[in-house]
Length: 228
Ligand SMILES: [Zn+2]
Image (cartoon, rainbow, N blue to C red; front, side, top):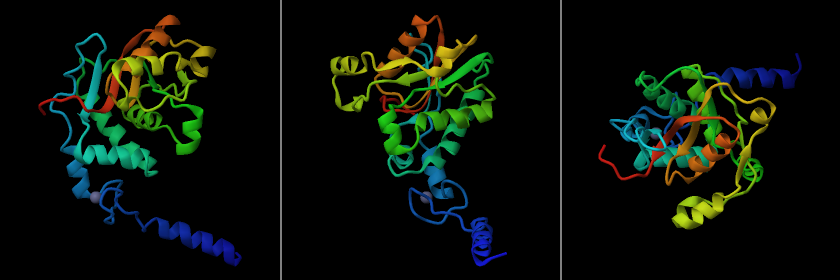
């Protein structure tokens, strides 16, 4: 064994013990979040994540977009912490599974897609990573490319309702997975933040045009004003 191989072996051995810091408080953490921040983020979980389900556009939301959950999502998306999608998507799945009246089988999970340019910039689509973790726990099949984003839309939160609608116009198309083969089951969409619902509305429209029905959406957080 030469020196380089030794160094490589030593590094991988040390990596077993050297845990990284919590991305929210920078304290050493054995898991994705330190125990303190874990609790802080969990504090933003909604008492009833199904409260927005019985609407024209059913959505199941894990938490309120504020405080530690908002910081966790920012750390995931903007500070390059894709590993945070694992616990966050897992919590979403746990909450989903605790509603057996909603959590049926025969669903195909599709993340809200990201434009190729943004994907190149960020390196990952957080909705896809959340969906991956969600599917790991729920056992539902994941179709990463059920939809595709062909327009690099600007962030919708800064726009008026009318501008949002215009911005999302022709932004999404059927993705390569569904162009190859349509799903037999209904689609469950996954997004990180559910705000105006315009993105989900556009996604639903595109899928419907191809004869695919949408069961609903699961999202990690919503800024909707609610009493937790
Ligand atoms: Zn922390």
